[in-house]
Structure formats: C-alpha cells, structure tokens
Amino acid sequence: MGHVPDPCSTSAPGDTTAEPSLIPDLITRIPWPHWALFIVVLAAGVLLVSCLLCIIYCCCRRRCQRRRKQPKDKEAVGLGSARSSTTTHLVQPDVDCLEPHSGGPQEWGRLLLSLEYDFRSQEIKVGLRQAENLKAEGTADPYARICVSTQAGRRHETKVHRGTLCPMFEETCCFLVPPAELPRAILKVQLLDFKRFSEHELLGEIQLPLSTVDPQHVLESWYLLGPPGTTEPEQMGELCFSLRYVPSSGRLTVVVLEARGLNPGLAEPYVKVQLMLNQRKWKKRKTSSKKSTTMPYFNEAFTFLVPFSLLQSVDLVLTIWAHGLHLRAEPVGKVLLGPRASGQPLQHWADMLAHARRPIAQWHHLQSPREVDRALALKPRLPLPRLRS
Image (cartoon, rainbow, N blue to C red):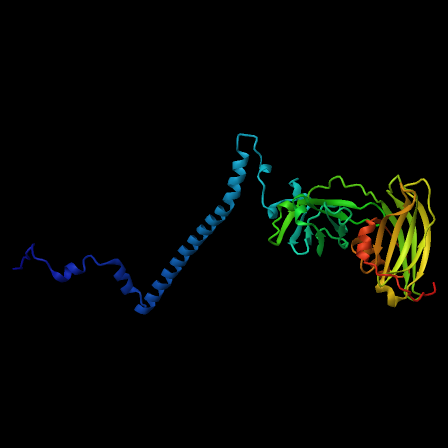
C-alpha cells in the first residue's frame, strides 16, 4: 500500500525554498543587469553623504557666527548687568571703533603726526600728514597752525584745503628746540576753518609735551583732537587788505582796508607796503596814520608795476607801524605774501593769480617782525633798475 514517510526525515529541496531571503529575491526579480544596480546604489550613497556634509557645514557655520558675536554680547552684558556705578564710557575703546555719536573726544576728529629730532641742528621736525572726521557744520576749509611754546612768535600754517573734513596736508616744518628745552617744550597744533571776511573758527587742537617724545626714534601716530579751547589772544592784531593783479599791464594793486585787535598802548598806527625783488628792497609806500584807535580804517590803494616775468621773484610785505612807549615808530607786526610765503598768505597770493583783474580781500594775522625778516633773508641793497609805475 502506500509508503509512510518518516517524520524525522527532511527533504533538502523543500527546506531550502521554504523561507527565501527578501533582498536577493527582489534583486533576482528586477530585470536589470548587476552593473546597473551597482551604479544606482553608489549614486544613492553619494547623495546621502552629500546631504550629511551639507548639514554638518551649516551647523558649523552657525556656531562660528555665534562665536564671533559672543565677545561683544558678553562685553555689553557684563558692563550693563553689573550692580555698580561702572558704565561703558569708562572703558576706552580702539580709535577705529569710535562712533561719532558717542559724545567722547573722538567727535573732534584725529590727526596723523610724525615727529623727529635732529641732534645736529637741534631742531624738531614735525610732519603733518592728514586729519580725519573733523567736526564742522556741513563742510569746511581747514588748515593747520603749528607752534612750539619755547619759540614765541614762530609758527607754521599749512595750505587751506577747500570743502573737506578729511584734509591731506603732507607738509613738514622745523622748530629750533635745544636739548635742554625739550623737557618743558610743548607742541601745539590747531585745526581752523578758513573764513575770508570773518574770524577763523577753531575746529580742534592738541597739545603734545615734547618730554614724552623719544628723540632717538621717528614717531608717527594718530592723535585725538581735543575740543577747541580758549585761543590765545592775538597780541599783534590783524590786517585786512585786497590784492589785484592785471597780467597784461603788470599792475599790482594793494588796497589797505583796516586793522583790528591792536595793542591799546600803540599810538598813530599806519601801514607800510614794501616790494622785495630777489631778496632785496625794491619799492615802498605807506598809508596815513590814524589817531586814538585800535581799529584803524585806512581804505588806501597803492599800485606797483610788476612785470609778469618778475612775479616769481617778488615778495610783498605789509607792516603795521606805531609809536610805542619810546615815542618812536616801531614795527608791530608783518604779513609776508608771495611765492615764498606759507599758509593763508600763500593762499591769498595764489587766489590773486587765479582770479586776474579781480580784487581779492582777506584778513591776515600779523606775524612777528623778526620771524618775517628771518624768512625774507634780505641781502644788502644794490642799485636796481627802476621801472616806471
């Protein structure tokens, strides 16, 4: 009859196909070659790795940004959360980080200076490079005035820079300061706004004791300008006059208008106008004297014949004379104009040449007569051919 199988016996083919694997079964059912399946798996792996790298990069970038902001936040929180009277203005920030609305000294601007001391000539060499962020209403016409406390009446004025609050000076001047006077000498630099017919406005100033300067090295650094202080009164006063030059006829017209701020102890002031040619006295004229006034009004015109070929060799000097305590006329102050002048006088001379046939009027501070004579370095007078005027 039929054969009864043994329950303990197993069939090999039946056992191998009873529980088949899922992935190999799917692979065998996909009608693709094996190399195509390998490429698909590889592309999926590359895509997955790329996504992971992008996520890691974004996380790292956010952490870096948080770390960059963290010091400023910590500093602000640390100063603001302190339970004391300490405030942020007690911490002095870097010059480059100063804000113009913070109300500190930086709102007056800053100045780049270089200082060098020459032991052979016993001179301090001051290099005025530039100024930045000067404080003024709108725009300004700044220039700088430099002096040393140990040299009374000696000062240097730069050119006027029109319509800017960040002038580039690039000028150098020297002051005679013996080594014994260095400890008590003070360098003073003032920034002023040029006004043709009114008093020049002080934009800021610095006072640098030369005792803090190392004479063995050349120092160049930025200095913060301080607020305009009480300017020293001009003991010698000011003089207003106009210049007009006509190149075709060679006529130079000087109109002496008025003076102000003269010493009340002076009597009968008058103005002498001189022309120097090749560092020698050439021509001179003078106004009438005015009595009992410190603000004399002259309004007198003088015309000189100066050919255009000689214009670069001519110096114009205006001097206020008055009777002092010795009852004799003495020079009160001088103004030097021409190609060898500097500061405002040189600017006035250049404006006259740039606007031919038009009178250019301007106020000038009087300088020390000795200082002007030293700048002129006059030679002994020789007979020169006189030109008809």
